[in-house]
Length: 154
Ligand SMILES: Nc1ncnc2c1ncn2[C@@H]1O[C@H](COP(=O)(O)OS(=O)(=O)O)[C@@H](OP(=O)(O)O)[C@H]1O
Ligand SMILES: Nc1ncnc2c1ncn2[C@@H]1O[C@H](COP(=O)(O)OP(=O)(O)O)[C@@H](O)[C@H]1O
Image (cartoon, rainbow, N blue to C red; front, side, top):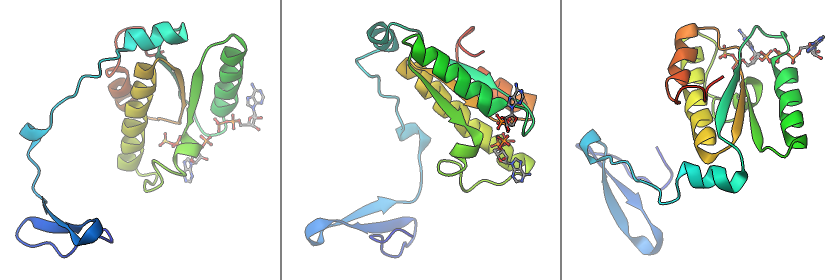
């Protein structure tokens, strides 16, 4: 439980805020209360600013097959051509975002799902996102591909 959280009871818990105030929070989620907030600055505007189109380049392959090397070379080449890119490397992500995941089939699927979501956000930001993970299951890669429009996931 979070440091500022008191014990929960009957689906509620208190969060202590500054100056001794407490907030009553519900532990019960209602998906109907979660709305999408449209950003007034759209993808097209961001892409215009960057003079490029956001997309995801997904590199898959066995450990030691050269994914990271290829991802870094591509990132360097894009940089030299004035294109903004960012590499999401499986090894690196497992130091932070995905540090709580192991290597079971379920964990690998969750690893790819999270990475696909982040890659989609980078592409939406207008970047060329280079994802380099073993990603052994086609169904997981296809799910990531399905997040983006045609030809924006390579
Ligand atoms: N079974 C097992 N046990 C221990 N360590 C392992 C295992 N499988 C992979 N690795 C190492 O984890 C690195 C990242 O793997 P990924 O996140 O790309 O794997 S996956 O896409 O979730 O399948 C991966 O990096 P790369 O070697 O660059 O592919 C490995 O260093
Ligand atoms: N095209 C290549 N030819 C020869 N060796 C390579 C090539 N690409 C990568 N390597 C070497 O293979 C090893 C594994 O490469 P790496 O990019 O770390 O693979 P991965 O990210 O798939 O685990 C490294 O020592 C790297 O220098």
